[in-house]
Length: 240
Image (cartoon, rainbow, N blue to C red; front, side, top):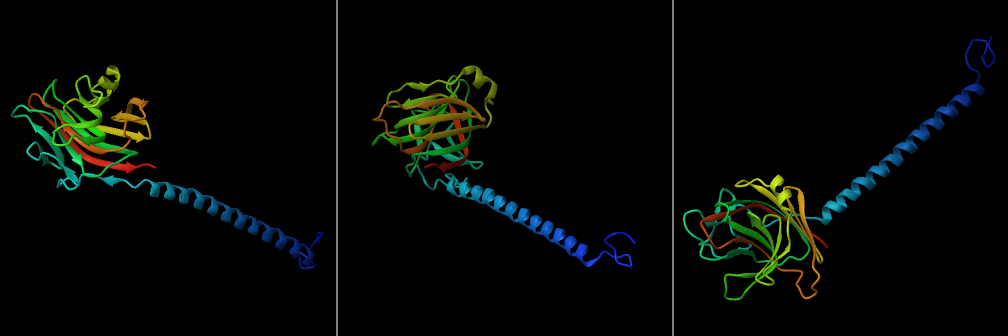
C-alpha cells in the first residue's frame, strides 16, 4: 500500500480535498483570465465604435441628381453616375462652378476625378469657397487639376496664385492621365493637405488670419479649349 492510499488503493480523503482545492483554484483562475480578456476586448471594440461614430461620412452626390448642388446646368450634366463639366465638342467660354448649397469647415473630402481634353485642359475642386454675387466666378482655395497643376493648391479669384506647388516628379509617378484618379482633401483649422492616389502632394498652413476657414465645395471646369472634368463618388467626413 502506497502512502496516501486506502487499503483499496484509492486516495485518502485528505489528499482528495487537496486535489479538489487545486482544481477549484485553477478553474477560478481560468474564469478570471476569461473575464479580463472580455473586458479588454470590450474596451478595444467599444473604442473603435466610438471613433467610427464620431466620423460619419456624408455622400455629397447620389449619382443621379443635383440635389444639394447649384450651378449652370447647361455646362454641368450627369453621365454614368458622375458629374461632368464642359464638353469635348466646343470651347468653354469661361470658368464655371457647381457648388454645394451647404457650408463646410473642417473635413476630409474624398472623390474620384478624370480630366479629358489634352494638355491645356484644366479644372479643380474648390474648398472653403464662396460665390461672387451675380458672377460665374468663386473665391477660395482650389485643389488643382491639369498638366503642371495636379496636386497643387491654388487661390482662386483672391490672391490668384499657387499657394503650394506639388512636386512634378511625384505627380509624374502617381497620376493616371485621362483616367480616374483619387483626390483627397483634408481641412483642419488653418492646415490643408492634398493627396492624389494616396500620396500626399502638399501640406499648407494658412498664415493670413483674415482668410475664411469655411465655405462651400465646388467643382470647376476651366474656360478654354474643349475639355471635360468628371467627378464621382464624392464623400465628405466632417471633423471637429
